[in-house]
Image (cartoon, rainbow, N blue to C red; front, side, top):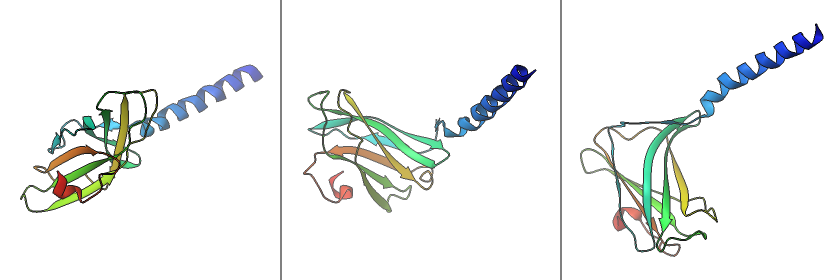
Length: 139
């Protein structure tokens, strides 16, 4: 009797944990109505950039590959410029990718309060470590 009760409680607990953990899994936003452009750089290139949603909010996630391709860490940061549909407003944000040795693809992410308005253009570019400045002018 005790074994059945314990097994039932464990099964119930795992079920609750399984259902609640779905909120932790990020969901890909397939058509945000926003164009995402990646620009080449001499020291690395952005290989992906996509919007994702999870319980923490919305993020732009992607990966950078060094040039030349290496499994060692690459420095620098990722600049993200958001141009509004009217073409006049521009917001520039900078993030640093998480450096992961022994991997050729280095991930980065940037938190957003909301997806930019439909028709906006998001431009993403990797910059070398010493290459600091207003990314809106460099992109």
